[in-house]
Image (tube, rainbow over all chains, first blue to last red):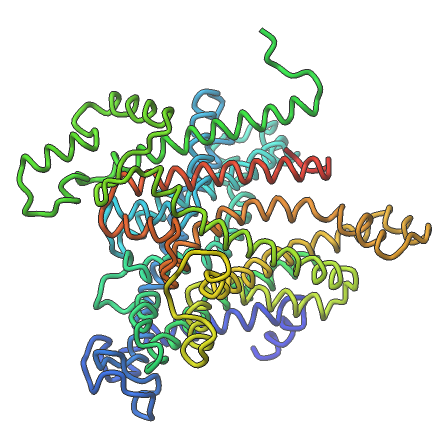
Length: 276
Length: 318
Protein backbone atom coordinates (compact mmCIF):
# COMPACT_ATOMS: atom_id res chain seq x y z
CA UNK A 1 0.00 0.00 0.00
CA UNK A 2 2.67 2.51 1.08
CA UNK A 3 4.87 1.39 -1.81
CA UNK A 4 2.04 2.00 -4.27
CA UNK A 5 1.39 5.48 -2.88
CA UNK A 6 5.11 6.27 -3.18
CA UNK A 7 5.15 5.13 -6.77
CA UNK A 8 2.07 7.20 -7.55
CA UNK A 9 3.57 10.27 -5.89
CA UNK A 10 6.64 9.98 -8.12
CA UNK A 11 4.50 10.34 -11.27
CA UNK A 12 4.06 13.87 -12.66
CA UNK A 13 1.41 15.64 -10.59
CA UNK A 14 1.04 12.58 -8.35
CA UNK A 15 2.33 14.28 -5.23
CA UNK A 16 -0.20 17.12 -5.49
CA UNK A 17 -3.05 14.67 -6.08
CA UNK A 18 -2.12 12.63 -3.01
CA UNK A 19 -1.81 15.72 -0.80
CA UNK A 20 -5.12 17.06 -2.13
CA UNK A 21 -6.99 13.79 -1.68
CA UNK A 22 -5.69 13.32 1.86
CA UNK A 23 -6.55 16.93 2.80
CA UNK A 24 -10.06 16.45 1.46
CA UNK A 25 -10.56 13.06 3.13
CA UNK A 26 -9.23 14.31 6.46
CA UNK A 27 -11.68 17.18 6.74
CA UNK A 28 -14.60 15.11 5.47
CA UNK A 29 -13.92 12.28 7.94
CA UNK A 30 -13.43 14.71 10.84
CA UNK A 31 -16.64 16.47 9.88
CA UNK A 32 -18.81 13.42 9.62
CA UNK A 33 -17.25 11.75 12.71
CA UNK A 34 -17.63 14.91 14.82
CA UNK A 35 -20.31 13.50 17.18
CA UNK A 36 -17.84 10.75 18.18
CA UNK A 37 -14.89 13.10 18.66
CA UNK A 38 -16.24 16.22 20.34
CA UNK A 39 -18.47 16.15 23.39
CA UNK A 40 -20.14 19.52 22.64
CA UNK A 41 -23.01 19.97 20.23
CA UNK A 42 -22.53 22.77 17.69
CA UNK A 43 -25.30 24.91 19.15
CA UNK A 44 -24.69 24.13 22.84
CA UNK A 45 -23.85 27.12 25.02
CA UNK A 46 -20.94 25.92 27.12
CA UNK A 47 -19.19 28.93 28.58
CA UNK A 48 -18.49 32.63 28.46
CA UNK A 49 -18.88 34.32 25.10
CA UNK A 50 -15.64 35.12 23.21
CA UNK A 51 -13.43 32.88 25.39
CA UNK A 52 -9.96 32.58 23.82
CA UNK A 53 -8.64 29.24 22.50
CA UNK A 54 -7.52 26.95 25.32
CA UNK A 55 -6.75 23.25 25.84
CA UNK A 56 -10.43 22.52 26.47
CA UNK A 57 -11.59 24.50 23.44
CA UNK A 58 -8.70 24.64 20.97
CA UNK A 59 -10.60 26.96 18.58
CA UNK A 60 -12.11 29.10 21.35
CA UNK A 61 -15.76 30.01 21.91
CA UNK A 62 -17.92 32.31 19.80
CA UNK A 63 -19.95 35.34 20.84
CA UNK A 64 -22.71 33.18 22.35
CA UNK A 65 -20.31 30.75 24.03
CA UNK A 66 -20.54 27.94 21.48
CA UNK A 67 -17.49 25.77 20.75
CA UNK A 68 -15.94 27.00 17.47
CA UNK A 69 -14.19 23.67 16.80
CA UNK A 70 -17.46 21.78 17.11
CA UNK A 71 -19.23 24.27 14.85
CA UNK A 72 -16.44 24.30 12.28
CA UNK A 73 -16.64 20.51 11.96
CA UNK A 74 -20.44 20.49 12.09
CA UNK A 75 -20.40 22.76 9.03
CA UNK A 76 -18.77 20.07 6.88
CA UNK A 77 -22.06 18.43 5.84
CA UNK A 78 -23.55 21.88 5.20
CA UNK A 79 -20.69 23.02 2.99
CA UNK A 80 -19.09 19.96 1.41
CA UNK A 81 -22.37 18.03 1.34
CA UNK A 82 -24.36 20.86 -0.26
CA UNK A 83 -21.52 21.61 -2.67
CA UNK A 84 -21.55 17.94 -3.68
CA UNK A 85 -25.26 18.20 -4.49
CA UNK A 86 -24.76 21.58 -6.12
CA UNK A 87 -22.19 20.07 -8.48
CA UNK A 88 -23.57 16.59 -9.13
CA UNK A 89 -27.15 17.62 -10.02
CA UNK A 90 -26.08 20.20 -12.64
CA UNK A 91 -23.41 17.77 -13.86
CA UNK A 92 -26.06 15.14 -14.54
CA UNK A 93 -28.67 17.47 -16.06
CA UNK A 94 -26.11 19.38 -18.12
CA UNK A 95 -24.43 16.28 -19.53
CA UNK A 96 -27.76 14.73 -20.54
CA UNK A 97 -29.02 17.93 -22.19
CA UNK A 98 -25.70 18.51 -23.92
CA UNK A 99 -25.68 15.02 -25.43
CA UNK A 100 -29.33 15.30 -26.50
CA UNK A 101 -28.57 18.63 -28.17
CA UNK A 102 -25.73 17.06 -30.13
CA UNK A 103 -28.23 14.51 -31.51
CA UNK A 104 -31.09 16.96 -32.06
CA UNK A 105 -31.97 17.91 -35.63
CA UNK A 106 -34.79 20.44 -35.20
CA UNK A 107 -33.19 23.84 -35.83
CA UNK A 108 -35.80 25.92 -34.00
CA UNK A 109 -35.46 23.75 -30.90
CA UNK A 110 -31.67 23.86 -31.13
CA UNK A 111 -31.40 27.61 -31.40
CA UNK A 112 -33.97 28.08 -28.63
CA UNK A 113 -32.16 25.86 -26.13
CA UNK A 114 -28.80 27.21 -27.27
CA UNK A 115 -29.93 30.78 -26.61
CA UNK A 116 -31.28 29.89 -23.17
CA UNK A 117 -27.92 28.28 -22.35
CA UNK A 118 -25.99 31.34 -23.56
CA UNK A 119 -28.38 33.64 -21.72
CA UNK A 120 -27.98 31.82 -18.40
CA UNK A 121 -24.21 31.65 -18.79
CA UNK A 122 -24.09 35.39 -19.43
CA UNK A 123 -24.88 36.13 -15.78
CA UNK A 124 -22.14 35.86 -13.18
CA UNK A 125 -23.21 32.77 -11.19
CA UNK A 126 -23.12 34.55 -7.84
CA UNK A 127 -25.31 37.39 -9.11
CA UNK A 128 -28.00 35.15 -10.56
CA UNK A 129 -27.89 33.00 -7.42
CA UNK A 130 -28.42 36.09 -5.25
CA UNK A 131 -31.32 37.25 -7.43
CA UNK A 132 -32.99 33.85 -7.37
CA UNK A 133 -32.66 33.60 -3.61
CA UNK A 134 -34.68 36.84 -3.44
CA UNK A 135 -37.50 35.15 -5.27
CA UNK A 136 -37.22 31.76 -3.51
CA UNK A 137 -36.24 32.89 -0.02
CA UNK A 138 -32.99 32.11 1.84
CA UNK A 139 -31.89 28.63 2.98
CA UNK A 140 -29.42 25.95 1.96
CA UNK A 141 -32.11 23.86 0.27
CA UNK A 142 -32.98 26.80 -1.97
CA UNK A 143 -29.30 27.28 -2.75
CA UNK A 144 -29.23 23.71 -4.09
CA UNK A 145 -32.33 24.45 -6.22
CA UNK A 146 -30.73 27.63 -7.56
CA UNK A 147 -27.55 25.77 -8.49
CA UNK A 148 -29.54 22.99 -10.14
CA UNK A 149 -31.52 25.52 -12.19
CA UNK A 150 -28.63 27.77 -13.20
CA UNK A 151 -25.39 25.82 -13.17
CA UNK A 152 -26.42 23.06 -15.63
CA UNK A 153 -26.03 25.45 -18.55
CA UNK A 154 -22.24 25.51 -18.22
CA UNK A 155 -22.11 21.71 -18.26
CA UNK A 156 -24.54 21.56 -21.17
CA UNK A 157 -22.30 23.82 -23.24
CA UNK A 158 -19.22 21.68 -22.55
CA UNK A 159 -21.12 18.42 -23.13
CA UNK A 160 -22.66 19.65 -26.36
CA UNK A 161 -19.34 20.77 -27.84
CA UNK A 162 -17.66 17.55 -26.83
CA UNK A 163 -20.53 15.32 -28.02
CA UNK A 164 -20.60 17.04 -31.42
CA UNK A 165 -16.89 16.27 -31.82
CA UNK A 166 -17.29 12.67 -30.62
CA UNK A 167 -20.15 12.06 -33.06
CA UNK A 168 -17.79 12.83 -35.92
CA UNK A 169 -15.13 10.39 -34.71
CA UNK A 170 -14.39 7.26 -36.69
CA UNK A 171 -15.34 4.84 -33.93
CA UNK A 172 -18.85 6.26 -33.72
CA UNK A 173 -19.14 6.12 -37.50
CA UNK A 174 -17.97 2.50 -37.38
CA UNK A 175 -20.52 1.63 -34.72
CA UNK A 176 -23.23 3.20 -36.87
CA UNK A 177 -22.15 1.29 -39.95
CA UNK A 178 -22.21 -1.94 -37.98
CA UNK A 179 -25.86 -1.23 -37.30
CA UNK A 180 -25.66 -0.78 -33.56
CA UNK A 181 -28.85 0.69 -32.11
CA UNK A 182 -28.73 4.38 -31.27
CA UNK A 183 -29.12 3.66 -27.55
CA UNK A 184 -25.94 1.61 -27.54
CA UNK A 185 -24.02 4.34 -29.36
CA UNK A 186 -25.22 6.93 -26.86
CA UNK A 187 -24.41 4.91 -23.76
CA UNK A 188 -21.31 3.00 -24.83
CA UNK A 189 -19.54 5.45 -27.11
CA UNK A 190 -20.71 9.00 -26.62
CA UNK A 191 -21.52 9.24 -22.90
CA UNK A 192 -18.18 7.96 -21.54
CA UNK A 193 -16.22 10.35 -23.75
CA UNK A 194 -18.40 13.32 -22.91
CA UNK A 195 -18.66 12.67 -19.19
CA UNK A 196 -14.89 12.47 -18.77
CA UNK A 197 -14.80 16.09 -19.91
CA UNK A 198 -17.76 17.30 -17.83
CA UNK A 199 -16.40 15.44 -14.77
CA UNK A 200 -13.09 17.26 -15.11
CA UNK A 201 -14.99 20.54 -15.17
CA UNK A 202 -17.09 19.41 -12.20
CA UNK A 203 -13.97 19.09 -10.10
CA UNK A 204 -12.92 22.70 -10.62
CA UNK A 205 -16.56 23.79 -10.43
CA UNK A 206 -16.66 22.29 -6.93
CA UNK A 207 -14.37 25.09 -5.74
CA UNK A 208 -16.58 27.74 -7.33
CA UNK A 209 -19.75 26.20 -5.88
CA UNK A 210 -18.36 25.90 -2.35
CA UNK A 211 -17.35 29.57 -2.54
CA UNK A 212 -20.85 30.47 -3.76
CA UNK A 213 -22.56 28.52 -0.97
CA UNK A 214 -20.41 30.08 1.72
CA UNK A 215 -20.61 33.49 0.03
CA UNK A 216 -24.41 33.42 0.00
CA UNK A 217 -24.42 32.36 3.65
CA UNK A 218 -21.90 35.10 4.40
CA UNK A 219 -24.40 37.61 3.00
CA UNK A 220 -27.16 36.03 5.09
CA UNK A 221 -28.89 34.42 2.10
CA UNK A 222 -27.79 30.80 2.56
CA UNK A 223 -27.72 28.78 5.79
CA UNK A 224 -30.11 30.14 8.42
CA UNK A 225 -28.90 30.63 11.98
CA UNK A 226 -28.25 28.75 14.23
CA UNK A 227 -27.10 26.21 11.63
CA UNK A 228 -23.31 25.92 11.48
CA UNK A 229 -21.89 26.94 8.10
CA UNK A 230 -18.45 28.38 7.36
CA UNK A 231 -19.59 31.47 5.48
CA UNK A 232 -22.13 32.48 8.09
CA UNK A 233 -19.65 31.77 10.91
CA UNK A 234 -17.15 34.10 9.21
CA UNK A 235 -19.89 36.73 8.98
CA UNK A 236 -20.70 36.22 12.69
CA UNK A 237 -17.11 36.89 13.65
CA UNK A 238 -16.86 40.03 11.54
CA UNK A 239 -18.08 42.31 14.31
CA UNK A 240 -15.70 40.75 16.84
CA UNK A 241 -12.63 40.72 14.60
CA UNK A 242 -10.71 42.96 17.01
CA UNK A 243 -11.25 40.97 20.21
CA UNK A 244 -12.01 37.44 18.96
CA UNK A 245 -10.26 36.65 15.67
CA UNK A 246 -10.78 32.91 16.18
CA UNK A 247 -14.49 33.05 15.36
CA UNK A 248 -13.62 34.18 11.83
CA UNK A 249 -10.25 32.63 11.19
CA UNK A 250 -10.88 28.94 11.99
CA UNK A 251 -13.99 28.47 9.79
CA UNK A 252 -12.11 30.41 7.11
CA UNK A 253 -9.17 28.03 7.32
CA UNK A 254 -11.55 25.06 7.06
CA UNK A 255 -13.14 26.61 3.98
CA UNK A 256 -9.75 27.27 2.37
CA UNK A 257 -8.56 23.80 3.35
CA UNK A 258 -11.40 22.15 1.43
CA UNK A 259 -11.17 24.44 -1.60
CA UNK A 260 -7.38 24.16 -1.78
CA UNK A 261 -7.50 20.38 -1.47
CA UNK A 262 -9.66 20.22 -4.60
CA UNK A 263 -7.52 22.73 -6.44
CA UNK A 264 -4.39 20.67 -5.68
CA UNK A 265 -6.15 17.65 -7.21
CA UNK A 266 -7.17 19.67 -10.29
CA UNK A 267 -3.64 21.03 -10.62
CA UNK A 268 -2.09 17.56 -10.26
CA UNK A 269 -4.47 16.03 -12.81
CA UNK A 270 -3.78 18.75 -15.36
CA UNK A 271 -0.04 18.33 -14.83
CA UNK A 272 -0.42 14.58 -15.40
CA UNK A 273 -2.41 15.25 -18.59
CA UNK A 274 0.27 17.56 -19.91
CA UNK A 275 3.00 15.02 -19.15
CA UNK A 276 1.20 12.30 -21.15
CA UNK B 1 -31.78 45.77 -49.02
CA UNK B 2 -28.06 45.42 -48.64
CA UNK B 3 -27.48 44.57 -45.01
CA UNK B 4 -24.95 41.77 -45.29
CA UNK B 5 -21.37 43.04 -45.22
CA UNK B 6 -19.16 41.57 -47.93
CA UNK B 7 -15.58 41.39 -46.66
CA UNK B 8 -14.87 38.33 -44.47
CA UNK B 9 -13.60 40.45 -41.58
CA UNK B 10 -16.68 42.64 -41.53
CA UNK B 11 -18.93 39.60 -41.86
CA UNK B 12 -17.30 37.95 -38.86
CA UNK B 13 -17.62 41.05 -36.72
CA UNK B 14 -21.18 41.53 -37.90
CA UNK B 15 -22.07 37.95 -36.92
CA UNK B 16 -20.51 38.34 -33.48
CA UNK B 17 -22.40 41.63 -32.96
CA UNK B 18 -25.70 39.98 -33.82
CA UNK B 19 -24.88 37.24 -31.34
CA UNK B 20 -24.11 39.74 -28.57
CA UNK B 21 -27.47 41.44 -29.13
CA UNK B 22 -29.39 38.19 -29.27
CA UNK B 23 -27.79 36.96 -26.03
CA UNK B 24 -28.68 40.30 -24.42
CA UNK B 25 -32.27 39.73 -25.48
CA UNK B 26 -32.24 36.32 -23.79
CA UNK B 27 -30.67 37.86 -20.70
CA UNK B 28 -33.73 40.12 -20.49
CA UNK B 29 -36.09 37.20 -21.05
CA UNK B 30 -34.43 35.21 -18.27
CA UNK B 31 -34.47 38.15 -15.86
CA UNK B 32 -38.17 38.51 -16.62
CA UNK B 33 -38.92 34.82 -16.25
CA UNK B 34 -37.07 34.35 -12.95
CA UNK B 35 -39.43 36.59 -11.05
CA UNK B 36 -42.54 35.03 -12.61
CA UNK B 37 -41.82 31.31 -12.58
CA UNK B 38 -40.61 31.07 -9.00
CA UNK B 39 -43.31 30.06 -6.55
CA UNK B 40 -44.80 32.73 -4.32
CA UNK B 41 -46.16 36.17 -5.08
CA UNK B 42 -43.60 39.01 -5.03
CA UNK B 43 -46.14 41.50 -3.75
CA UNK B 44 -47.15 39.48 -0.69
CA UNK B 45 -43.52 38.56 -0.03
CA UNK B 46 -42.58 42.24 0.00
CA UNK B 47 -45.44 43.30 2.28
CA UNK B 48 -45.15 40.40 4.72
CA UNK B 49 -47.72 37.97 6.06
CA UNK B 50 -50.02 40.43 7.81
CA UNK B 51 -50.61 42.71 4.81
CA UNK B 52 -54.09 43.69 3.71
CA UNK B 53 -55.63 42.35 0.53
CA UNK B 54 -56.00 45.79 -1.06
CA UNK B 55 -52.38 46.75 -0.37
CA UNK B 56 -51.18 43.53 -2.03
CA UNK B 57 -53.47 44.18 -5.01
CA UNK B 58 -52.17 47.74 -5.31
CA UNK B 59 -48.55 46.59 -5.24
CA UNK B 60 -49.29 43.91 -7.82
CA UNK B 61 -50.68 46.60 -10.04
CA UNK B 62 -47.64 48.81 -9.43
CA UNK B 63 -45.35 45.90 -10.35
CA UNK B 64 -47.46 45.19 -13.43
CA UNK B 65 -48.32 41.70 -12.23
CA UNK B 66 -52.09 42.12 -12.54
CA UNK B 67 -52.27 41.35 -16.27
CA UNK B 68 -51.63 38.06 -18.06
CA UNK B 69 -47.98 36.95 -18.55
CA UNK B 70 -47.88 37.75 -22.30
CA UNK B 71 -49.14 41.26 -21.72
CA UNK B 72 -46.61 41.57 -18.88
CA UNK B 73 -43.80 40.50 -21.19
CA UNK B 74 -44.70 43.06 -23.87
CA UNK B 75 -45.03 45.81 -21.28
CA UNK B 76 -41.65 44.79 -19.90
CA UNK B 77 -39.97 44.89 -23.31
CA UNK B 78 -41.63 48.21 -24.05
CA UNK B 79 -40.33 49.69 -20.79
CA UNK B 80 -36.85 48.33 -21.44
CA UNK B 81 -36.74 49.77 -24.96
CA UNK B 82 -37.44 53.18 -23.44
CA UNK B 83 -34.62 52.54 -20.95
CA UNK B 84 -37.07 52.26 -18.06
CA UNK B 85 -35.94 49.62 -15.57
CA UNK B 86 -38.68 50.31 -13.03
CA UNK B 87 -38.79 52.15 -9.73
CA UNK B 88 -37.48 51.07 -6.34
CA UNK B 89 -40.21 50.00 -3.91
CA UNK B 90 -38.15 51.22 -0.98
CA UNK B 91 -36.89 54.65 -1.99
CA UNK B 92 -39.08 55.49 -4.99
CA UNK B 93 -35.98 56.32 -7.04
CA UNK B 94 -35.83 54.90 -10.56
CA UNK B 95 -33.65 51.82 -10.92
CA UNK B 96 -31.70 53.42 -13.75
CA UNK B 97 -30.75 56.26 -11.44
CA UNK B 98 -29.71 53.88 -8.65
CA UNK B 99 -27.42 52.05 -11.07
CA UNK B 100 -26.12 55.32 -12.53
CA UNK B 101 -25.25 56.60 -9.05
CA UNK B 102 -23.66 53.47 -7.65
CA UNK B 103 -21.88 51.93 -10.62
CA UNK B 104 -19.05 54.51 -11.06
CA UNK B 105 -17.54 53.58 -7.69
CA UNK B 106 -17.63 49.87 -8.52
CA UNK B 107 -16.15 50.55 -11.93
CA UNK B 108 -13.40 52.69 -10.41
CA UNK B 109 -11.96 50.08 -8.13
CA UNK B 110 -12.46 47.24 -10.60
CA UNK B 111 -10.64 49.24 -13.29
CA UNK B 112 -7.76 49.98 -10.92
CA UNK B 113 -7.56 46.32 -9.93
CA UNK B 114 -7.41 45.24 -13.57
CA UNK B 115 -4.78 47.83 -14.40
CA UNK B 116 -2.49 46.82 -11.55
CA UNK B 117 -3.10 43.11 -12.03
CA UNK B 118 -2.25 43.40 -15.73
CA UNK B 119 0.87 45.48 -15.13
CA UNK B 120 2.19 42.99 -12.57
CA UNK B 121 1.13 39.87 -14.52
CA UNK B 122 3.00 40.78 -17.69
CA UNK B 123 6.55 40.66 -16.28
CA UNK B 124 5.78 37.64 -14.06
CA UNK B 125 4.10 35.66 -16.83
CA UNK B 126 6.72 36.49 -19.45
CA UNK B 127 9.74 35.89 -17.23
CA UNK B 128 8.59 32.61 -15.66
CA UNK B 129 7.17 31.43 -18.98
CA UNK B 130 10.35 32.30 -20.85
CA UNK B 131 12.55 30.55 -18.27
CA UNK B 132 10.16 27.53 -18.44
CA UNK B 133 11.91 26.00 -15.43
CA UNK B 134 9.70 23.16 -14.20
CA UNK B 135 10.25 23.98 -10.53
CA UNK B 136 9.43 27.69 -10.97
CA UNK B 137 6.40 27.05 -13.12
CA UNK B 138 5.08 24.43 -10.74
CA UNK B 139 5.54 26.43 -7.55
CA UNK B 140 4.05 29.50 -9.24
CA UNK B 141 1.03 27.48 -10.38
CA UNK B 142 0.56 25.98 -6.91
CA UNK B 143 0.75 29.39 -5.23
CA UNK B 144 -1.74 30.97 -7.63
CA UNK B 145 -4.13 28.03 -7.39
CA UNK B 146 -4.18 28.47 -3.61
CA UNK B 147 -5.00 32.18 -3.99
CA UNK B 148 -7.75 31.40 -6.50
CA UNK B 149 -9.27 28.72 -4.27
CA UNK B 150 -9.44 31.07 -1.27
CA UNK B 151 -12.79 32.89 -1.11
CA UNK B 152 -12.41 36.66 -1.47
CA UNK B 153 -14.34 37.37 1.72
CA UNK B 154 -11.87 35.34 3.76
CA UNK B 155 -8.92 37.16 2.17
CA UNK B 156 -10.74 40.41 3.00
CA UNK B 157 -11.30 39.37 6.61
CA UNK B 158 -7.65 38.46 7.13
CA UNK B 159 -6.58 41.71 5.44
CA UNK B 160 -8.88 43.71 7.71
CA UNK B 161 -7.49 41.85 10.71
CA UNK B 162 -3.91 42.78 9.77
CA UNK B 163 -4.29 46.23 8.24
CA UNK B 164 -7.28 47.72 10.03
CA UNK B 165 -7.53 46.04 13.40
CA UNK B 166 -3.88 45.46 14.34
CA UNK B 167 -2.42 48.44 12.45
CA UNK B 168 -4.39 51.52 11.60
CA UNK B 169 -3.54 51.51 7.90
CA UNK B 170 -7.05 51.34 6.52
CA UNK B 171 -10.47 52.17 7.96
CA UNK B 172 -12.47 49.05 8.88
CA UNK B 173 -15.34 50.25 6.72
CA UNK B 174 -17.02 53.37 5.43
CA UNK B 175 -16.54 55.60 2.44
CA UNK B 176 -16.22 59.24 1.53
CA UNK B 177 -16.43 60.45 -2.06
CA UNK B 178 -13.84 62.69 -3.73
CA UNK B 179 -10.65 61.57 -5.40
CA UNK B 180 -7.68 61.62 -3.04
CA UNK B 181 -9.77 61.01 0.08
CA UNK B 182 -11.58 57.95 -1.23
CA UNK B 183 -8.35 56.05 -1.91
CA UNK B 184 -7.90 55.66 1.85
CA UNK B 185 -11.02 53.47 1.78
CA UNK B 186 -10.45 51.88 -1.60
CA UNK B 187 -6.82 50.75 -1.49
CA UNK B 188 -7.51 47.58 0.50
CA UNK B 189 -10.37 46.32 -1.74
CA UNK B 190 -8.25 47.21 -4.78
CA UNK B 191 -5.27 45.31 -3.34
CA UNK B 192 -7.42 42.22 -2.63
CA UNK B 193 -8.97 42.25 -6.11
CA UNK B 194 -5.56 42.79 -7.66
CA UNK B 195 -4.10 39.79 -5.85
CA UNK B 196 -6.93 37.51 -7.04
CA UNK B 197 -6.91 38.82 -10.62
CA UNK B 198 -3.14 38.73 -10.78
CA UNK B 199 -3.20 35.03 -9.95
CA UNK B 200 -5.75 34.28 -12.66
CA UNK B 201 -4.34 36.48 -15.41
CA UNK B 202 -0.68 35.58 -14.94
CA UNK B 203 -1.53 31.85 -15.04
CA UNK B 204 -3.10 32.17 -18.47
CA UNK B 205 -0.37 34.46 -19.73
CA UNK B 206 2.24 32.01 -18.44
CA UNK B 207 0.57 29.13 -20.26
CA UNK B 208 0.39 31.02 -23.54
CA UNK B 209 3.97 32.28 -23.25
CA UNK B 210 5.07 28.66 -22.83
CA UNK B 211 3.09 27.80 -25.99
CA UNK B 212 4.50 30.77 -27.90
CA UNK B 213 8.03 29.82 -26.90
CA UNK B 214 7.96 26.73 -29.06
CA UNK B 215 6.72 28.58 -32.16
CA UNK B 216 9.10 28.82 -35.10
CA UNK B 217 9.00 32.61 -35.37
CA UNK B 218 10.53 32.88 -31.89
CA UNK B 219 13.58 30.98 -33.07
CA UNK B 220 13.74 33.26 -36.11
CA UNK B 221 13.74 36.24 -33.76
CA UNK B 222 16.64 34.82 -31.80
CA UNK B 223 18.59 34.08 -34.97
CA UNK B 224 17.91 37.52 -36.42
CA UNK B 225 19.24 38.99 -33.20
CA UNK B 226 16.50 41.56 -32.56
CA UNK B 227 16.93 43.79 -29.52
CA UNK B 228 15.81 42.39 -26.22
CA UNK B 229 12.87 44.75 -25.69
CA UNK B 230 11.64 44.26 -29.26
CA UNK B 231 12.02 40.52 -28.85
CA UNK B 232 9.99 40.28 -25.66
CA UNK B 233 7.30 42.63 -26.94
CA UNK B 234 6.79 41.50 -30.55
CA UNK B 235 7.90 37.89 -30.44
CA UNK B 236 6.76 36.76 -26.99
CA UNK B 237 4.18 39.04 -25.44
CA UNK B 238 2.06 40.14 -28.39
CA UNK B 239 1.38 36.63 -29.76
CA UNK B 240 0.57 35.43 -26.22
CA UNK B 241 -1.74 38.27 -25.30
CA UNK B 242 -4.95 37.23 -27.07
CA UNK B 243 -6.05 34.47 -24.62
CA UNK B 244 -5.24 36.80 -21.73
CA UNK B 245 -7.48 39.52 -23.13
CA UNK B 246 -10.34 37.10 -23.74
CA UNK B 247 -9.94 35.90 -20.16
CA UNK B 248 -9.75 39.42 -18.75
CA UNK B 249 -12.99 40.44 -20.43
CA UNK B 250 -14.63 37.32 -19.04
CA UNK B 251 -13.15 37.89 -15.57
CA UNK B 252 -14.47 41.43 -15.58
CA UNK B 253 -17.99 39.97 -15.41
CA UNK B 254 -17.07 37.48 -12.71
CA UNK B 255 -15.35 40.24 -10.74
CA UNK B 256 -18.55 42.29 -10.95
CA UNK B 257 -20.26 39.34 -9.27
CA UNK B 258 -17.61 39.19 -6.57
CA UNK B 259 -17.93 42.92 -5.81
CA UNK B 260 -21.22 42.14 -4.14
CA UNK B 261 -19.36 40.51 -1.28
CA UNK B 262 -16.45 42.94 -1.08
CA UNK B 263 -18.73 45.98 -1.08
CA UNK B 264 -20.79 44.46 1.69
CA UNK B 265 -17.68 43.86 3.79
CA UNK B 266 -16.16 47.29 3.27
CA UNK B 267 -19.54 49.10 3.21
CA UNK B 268 -18.75 50.71 -0.14
CA UNK B 269 -21.83 52.30 -1.72
CA UNK B 270 -21.39 50.52 -5.06
CA UNK B 271 -23.78 48.53 -7.20
CA UNK B 272 -23.09 45.26 -5.37
CA UNK B 273 -24.23 46.67 -2.07
CA UNK B 274 -27.33 48.12 -3.73
CA UNK B 275 -28.15 44.64 -4.97
CA UNK B 276 -27.69 43.03 -1.55
CA UNK B 277 -29.80 45.61 0.25
CA UNK B 278 -32.48 45.27 -2.44
CA UNK B 279 -32.44 41.50 -1.95
CA UNK B 280 -32.77 41.83 1.82
CA UNK B 281 -35.69 44.27 1.40
CA UNK B 282 -37.40 42.17 -1.36
CA UNK B 283 -37.16 45.22 -3.62
CA UNK B 284 -38.01 43.35 -6.84
CA UNK B 285 -37.61 46.09 -9.45
CA UNK B 286 -34.11 46.88 -8.21
CA UNK B 287 -33.11 43.20 -8.14
CA UNK B 288 -34.45 42.64 -11.63
CA UNK B 289 -32.92 45.83 -13.04
CA UNK B 290 -29.50 45.14 -11.53
CA UNK B 291 -29.66 41.58 -12.80
CA UNK B 292 -30.32 42.79 -16.36
CA UNK B 293 -27.54 45.35 -16.03
CA UNK B 294 -25.02 42.75 -14.84
CA UNK B 295 -26.04 40.30 -17.57
CA UNK B 296 -25.94 42.77 -20.46
CA UNK B 297 -22.68 44.33 -19.33
CA UNK B 298 -21.07 40.88 -19.09
CA UNK B 299 -22.25 40.02 -22.60
CA UNK B 300 -20.78 43.19 -24.07
CA UNK B 301 -17.56 42.98 -22.08
CA UNK B 302 -16.94 39.55 -23.51
CA UNK B 303 -17.96 40.83 -26.97
CA UNK B 304 -15.39 43.63 -26.85
CA UNK B 305 -12.78 41.31 -25.35
CA UNK B 306 -13.26 38.80 -28.20
CA UNK B 307 -13.21 41.58 -30.77
CA UNK B 308 -10.06 43.18 -29.42
CA UNK B 309 -8.29 39.83 -29.15
CA UNK B 310 -9.32 39.02 -32.73
CA UNK B 311 -7.99 42.29 -34.07
CA UNK B 312 -4.75 41.67 -32.19
CA UNK B 313 -4.35 38.08 -33.29
CA UNK B 314 -6.36 36.63 -36.17
CA UNK B 315 -5.91 33.09 -34.87
CA UNK B 316 -8.61 33.79 -32.26
CA UNK B 317 -12.00 32.27 -32.99
CA UNK B 318 -14.65 34.96 -33.05
